[in-house]
Length: 502
Image (tube, rainbow, N blue to C red):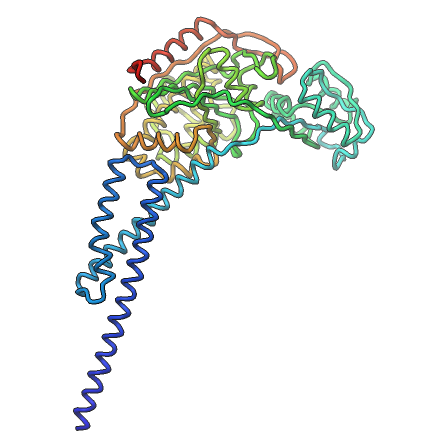
């Protein structure tokens, strides 16, 4: 009896353990099914919210998830389901939860990217108090009662900035005809400091790289600029549009006020899948619309992207629908993110005069470029007899190569997050999140092959007064015939394949 009783007790204990394991397994499966259901709903909801997936793929994903869920959830939630089926359902659920995690990461990355590059940026026009590099002033209070040199400019914002400094630091002003004249008297000690616009200071630094070792900025006054958005939104998936691509001559912070060294209009026809890249010389002699003064196109960037757009619309007579602003870092990181590009160079040359970009050798013909090499290829001009004109054409070659590589089906799918990370902090645009999502959706829908054409506007060498400099400098004089031909080509691309109903 004792032996039988002992066996019964052991059997009962084993049965209790199995029941406990079964209940524990059921509880785990139920919890996993709840997690699966919540993640599936969140993933589908995020897909719908983002609206970047073409409808055929979206509904295919929804139906696929629904079918899978009909098998997974009831089996995992039931108390008495067969062990084999539950194990199968659990494994499928775990795999799909992993898919939801990766997919959600992609989507959240996309949301963050779109939010970052489309976020409105505050525009300021800055003014500097500049002193000699060895000056002992700790701040502008040390200049109290002294007379600062400044240049004669009839500009309301400039005058307001001077008045603020006068009130804050108790300074007076002596006027010089040009910024260069004021700077010269600073160097000779006739002025303890000078008050000039940040735009003029940046241009002078570009003209004389040693300036930063000779002087320093003691104080900056930032004046908020209420700019009018001159762009004109359209339905980007159904109507042709012009995007102004402004490449600023700095690395790092995209919000930095700087000259615009790359000036390109990308005309996009989403109906015919055509893109036309139109380059404009950086030194094109234009009118700055808010200053009502002549200057080089490159200097317009010192007063904000809307200043550049206004100047370009004035000379071209076309609407700029959107803008994209990038910097040197964008080129380097984006090219590396997509695994490099191939560029067919019309010339053999070696880069020089660009510090860390010196010594890059390019052959006539196909070159495989990483990010740094692509930037060097874009920036070189001293190797060519036509200088900046050839640089414009080289910039177009790089842009074309990036577009073709980035939009290829394998690259856009396998390098997607790398591309977003590469440009997120180095690009800004006034395309809305909805417009960006619509363009992504259109590309994913049919993966069209884009026909890319190029043209470069040319001018003649000239000499003219530049507002940002305060004196005359070398320019590129506009050629009305060149402008007219370029506009005709732009309009031809925009009207191609369009009907009265579009």
